[in-house]
Image 1 (cartoon, rainbow, N blue to C red):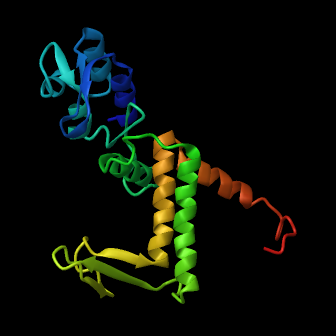
Image 2 (cartoon, one colour; image 1 turned 45 degrees about the vertical axis):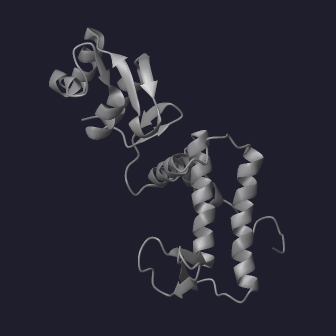
Length: 208
């Protein structure tokens, strides 16, 4: 079954009603053309009607529940192979949206400044004597405010700290930005690495 072909059909349909948030849905009219196009890629009428009726269906529910999509980027249903860079881009951006960080749009300059801030935090840890591989976890008691520190993350609620965590934050900020602007980061990385492989030894002649 060709997921991308199915998504191309679903994304081409005219939306008659939609809603976001915890009860998100995207409704489209069921037409003979739509049924025929989806049938061409293995989607049966029974599958379509599971998510609505003979008049309208929720393509958001159908795409996610049937595994055709695992993300929604800039108004389009998308599928990113789990474990790939673009999958992490989608996950990072969806989490940021879910946590409300895009309720008010940010400028591109603000996004770059936030990436800089994570790099500065990594540098600050290094200046404070922390080693690049040194990591620890912190948790604050909500009643007493007392902060506990451990070398083991007892639960996901223990905050990862240290240079590895700050470097992860840099990457997550980049992923979020790429999700916001629909940048194919995986393609960009592959292109840039292929180009870098063609460059001469210590190109540019700079000291640093």
